[in-house]
Image 1: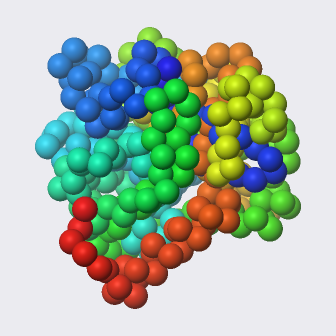
Image 2: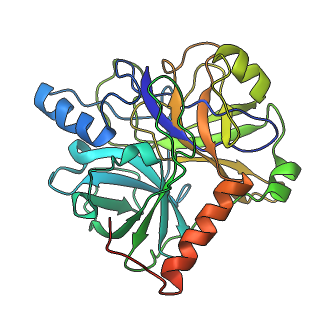
Length: 296
């Protein structure tokens, strides 16, 4: 089973993200997998059977890289989403409890990991106490916040509220997922951001495949290929409204075997009320200077 990490939306959707092909969820954290790949000389990065993204199409997409690795591609281990107000969302499983903010840097405003661009420091990691890791399925509340020192000069993506979701998200609607994860299960590395359109899937249907593992706060999207894959974890799943506006529905979190028929990707559902409340309550702590305790 491979790590991926997506946020799920309402509509009774289930979350099914697709992790790396040979790595069981919970066994090795994405940061450590980069070190393992570096030792073995294997680097795979892109959306599974997707298309190269153009600069400016997904300005909120960011890359998380290891601070101690100079090469951006080799250091990339997860995606993230810029939502404004010094806030980047990513999957909680991307950053193990033992990881510190000094070990993580962010790349923004790029589609090519080889582009020469300054790295962005993380001010603080805000972990979700409701996060429940899992070794055999998607994790509950798989989301955390990376607080930045300053706003990015990039367009943020808007969080889909339950009302927005009810208006634009229907079963079968095509959502857009982006990332620098695997392009297929045994592909050569690529530094270019990839995108793919994946259909939203009913939670009940998703649970029939995943044996009831899709819970409240998760969303399913995709029915095979194209798909999100290893390395895409923490990246955005967005949906367009009638006016062309884009809304964040989920974060890539989990799945079984990228691009396999009838195996949807699972995402953290960002329009879920409990998740949205956690995001806003956490932001209020640092946006109003209520920042208790030492950074974790």
